[in-house]
Length: 216
Image (cartoon, rainbow, N blue to C red; front, side):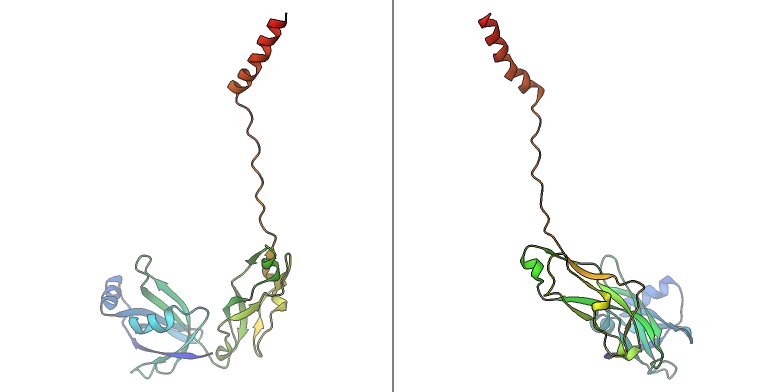
């Protein structure tokens, strides 16, 4: 996996007002933490982080570049990115420091590739999950998995045990769950005929009654 470099500086943790001033200055607040790391408050260039890291799918590693020797060259996993609900701007990020020699558990996205035979025959491709959990060394984190669906007919599925794993990567699961399936086409039932309105029934019966009176 490619490791992206981002420029960071230590900051003084404080109030929401300080965080807002930081954002107005083109920075975003962040935090670096880990199992062997005391939490460190960070400030990160918003433009650089947003354009290179924030919109990437899956799990990604970053190498910290800093004027501080205590932060420089530390490697972290982008654990969480928070976005403003209206503007969509990045407002905060959590970085989880990793040991490059220790295996970690992360989630990797699935890309469904090809056109299933069952879809050609009218079925519907239905992904069951969009990502899976794997365990590996940090530098072996898969960016994504390609799931070839071309051979699936209606009613067929691909399960987690069918997905090839790269060397050093292990899928984490308790049961052999389905990743994707092809379901039969949806058939809409014809609407039932509406019952005749009472007025219409009376109108239909009236001529018959008049005919009987004339015969008598």
